[in-house]
Length: 332
Ligand SMILES: Cc1ncc(COP(=O)(O)O)c(C=O)c1O
Image (cartoon, rainbow, N blue to C red):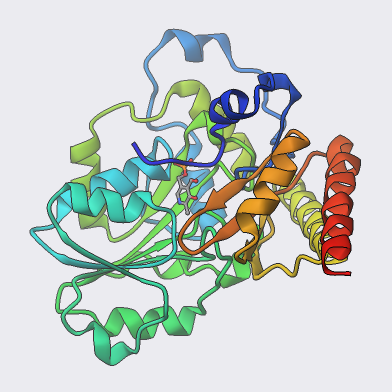
């Protein structure tokens, strides 16, 4: 199993601090969770039904007719490698590690590279995986760039665009184009909606591939309660608008706070900030001493910080100021 953010048990042991004493900034999950509606009692009792309002609501939300609901986009990441014969797969990194892991596990030939490829380099690539915006670097590729890459792939090639962090900036999404053969878009309700525990994701792709995935995943991939919650969240455009505003404002504040502590973020999305720097491990340890858990990356040396809930901004600010003062003291 790969290591991920949200591994607080590890923090508890390493720093001898109980679970409830941590501020967890190690994921990119929104601190504002969609207010989950009361679950109708019969949803616990009967098997999930597929002709509820979920898919039509999702079609409106993603502006795409062809989609499949899955138990988190992770389920699709694991299923997709089964739907192709042996392939040459390029993952643009450093990215969510489950993509490369899933393709490798299924015997495909996987290359990972950080710098963006020229279209001419893609002629012998069967599958290109791009997280957009990228987790953890925040890099955003334009729809035009993605189209150029897709057209340059080997015949029958797939471009997989993981848009798990796209909901705050839907104007950059290519969800409307995903019914074209060879383009697969993955979405998640875990990040922007703060519903990671509900395990709801969507695959947007051509109907034939969706049929294959559906067959592979089998019936009842989503529980009835998860379907009800996801339907409510995707239908609630007022909440989504307010959420975009809140996250944008908070990320602005976060980046300003980091700058004030002498940390110039290398990248960010609406849900996390990323700093690639040799001092990343030192900052991670400094924050952990104060009970603030972040995601540390070894290669390249980098740290990712998610947004705190409103009541914990002061705590983060104090820890960052102390870091800034320490560093100023060292260099002064
Ligand atoms: C880029 C990216 N894609 C997909 C996932 C999987 O998310 P979920 O299975 O909760 O939809 C994650 C989780 O961290 C992620 O960071």
